[in-house]
Length: 368
Ligand code: CP
Image (cartoon, rainbow, N blue to C red; front, top):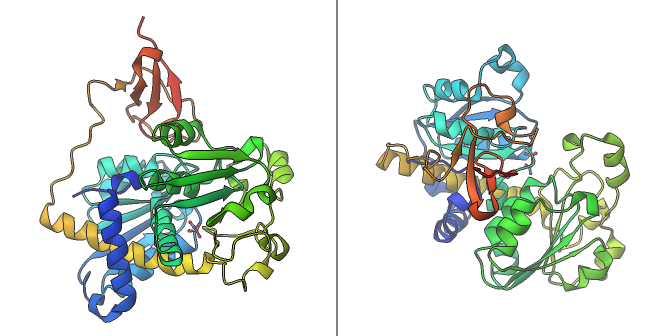
């Protein structure tokens, strides 16, 4: 029995298998209507959502299962001070699987450490969003016929755009994928993805702030919303939010075979006039997302039925720093939850570089 907190919790073979299952669900819907009969999904959404929560719920209902949950923290006992750890133990008494979204980075990971049922990360702050990545991968596969040999441009808020972080991590395991990072200086990709994923695995990448300069080279253009809710400085958000707007005019410079993706919600970074362009795939992504979530729920419930024992966590590995330093990231779950052990994994011990096990923020530590 295991959880999916990061897209790298799934192997490439498992992602291939999920894509095949999702394709089969699309082709043969009647074969799956009873697959989750008697099973219950809990959707614990501490942060707003339209697609992710409702697609998880639709996915479970369409497979004959049932759903409980909440869509805002204000209606839960979190307001009285209940921790994620306790909430997860409680929900494990009511449901068979959890999908959790939370504004704090690492919160679903904390839930997975405490729940006795599988936990799926449905988005944790600006950190990651693995099931959106599953939707993205199925869309790319269906539109381009491959996940290798692609040039993918990520445009907009690469700093807080959790869907970007997860999709780049996923693509790092495919052959000959070139990443074009298109953002203003203030919204560049965080180091744990740029250095920890792209450079570490030797992916080709380019950084630019000019969409017009690169749009003609792309197989995929992945547009993103500037995530106003994550900015500390609201003036900076207002200054940056309209930096990139994809228009029908700009689309004239793109390849005929290019696909435009966007995790949605869109604000105004893609003109509605682009929606009728056959290259606009963002509503197909929504459709595909439900089937990948169906496939994932089915896989994790099947695994849990075969082996209900929880997968051992490697958190207390002797290489890790345990309660030695604290996370510097104010968005990390360790800054608000009581009594969570502060755990850092070594990245480069000789240089004293460690990363928080919950949010991946980098910190330096030397044991002198
Ligand atoms: N893509 C996505 O996560 O959308 P929601 O915020 O509506 O769930």
